[in-house]
Image (cartoon, rainbow, N blue to C red; front, side, top):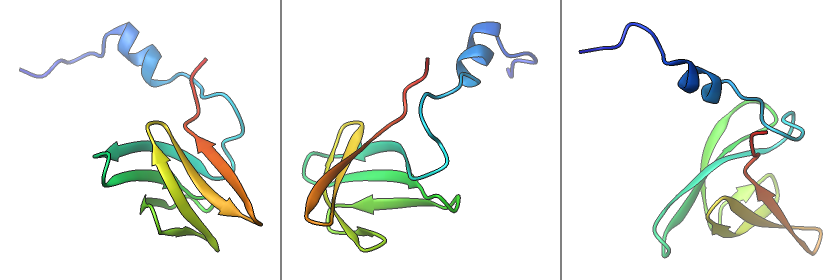
Length: 87
């Protein structure tokens, strides 16, 4: 049977603001196995894409995906993108 109202604790948790700048690239989540990790990323244009190691964000290759974060190479350096956390 479906609930007609959402419990207050659930509604509050679902609407918490994430910390940090959300106007750029955002890691929504990571999933998959240790041998085939995947990541969901929201681009600055608002598109949601699924990525794997070897894919690219723009010209930057994805070099690692771990729980809650992914690494990409940019201008000879490794940059890490982590999931935003709620306050």
